[in-house]
Image 1 (spheres, rainbow, N blue to C red):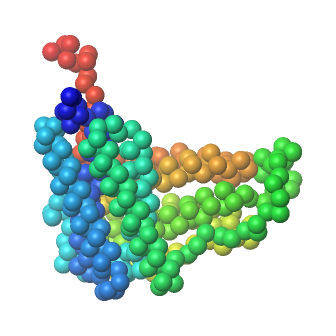
Image 2 (cartoon, one colour):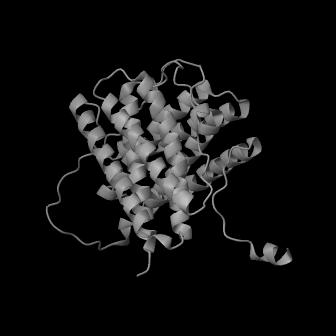
Image 3 (cartoon, rainbow, N blue to C red):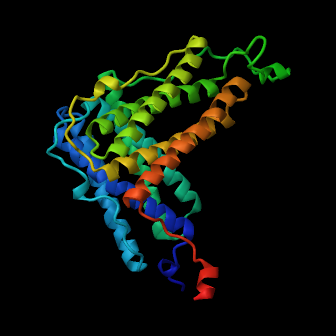
Length: 334
């Protein structure tokens, strides 16, 4: 009988495990700092569980890499975090941050599961997905209990099923615009919320970054985040719908370095990638032309910002190279 654990890792499995490993090393650093500074005793066990899950994931993936003779990624280490640095974010923001990270974790593990075939890799990603769901549940429940959870907008329940009869459903530049759909409202709300969290995170990072080009990059990102918050908030307000709260006040005035500039840049570029994905999904789900065009116009701008971030990381030697396919032409020349 064939030993299924001796089947080589596919490119998709290599990619998902490599990415998960890097992300979990970052999670260990960030959670270690949060755990050192947390004051809310209801938030503490959630941070502890997040930290322990990340460490357990790293142990499982290390075993897989060793068996495959795959070089274990470096990611981030104790050198990338200073737990004794002063508090940088409020406990309420930490809870919201962990909730956002759980959403990204669920999306990533779901995608990985769709492409994984080897039983041990499938089992691992199922575990990670369940961890993400568990973290989402616990952060949601505590935020609801503490009164900090902001629900998406409410709209009236439809009276009956309708079908689109006129092209006016798609218009948005001239004449009377139709009201936005529940799907469009949801994406606008989500993009305000994620950019509000991102802006607060960037603000804290910008205060504590050491390298000048990193600091300037973060300040530029702060302005972009505010631009996107204003854009999507205005669209919601015009529809008489509420927008999520900002998190600017959740950042302390500390300027003492907490995380390495390498970790900061990786974290921000990873969140930018998620933001581009959010814009793309929103574009596909927004048939009203003015809203769709708004997303389409923002994607090139944020993509250029992401590229500039990658260039900074390359210039400083911070960008760890993911697994690559063999260059057959190069091998033939050798």
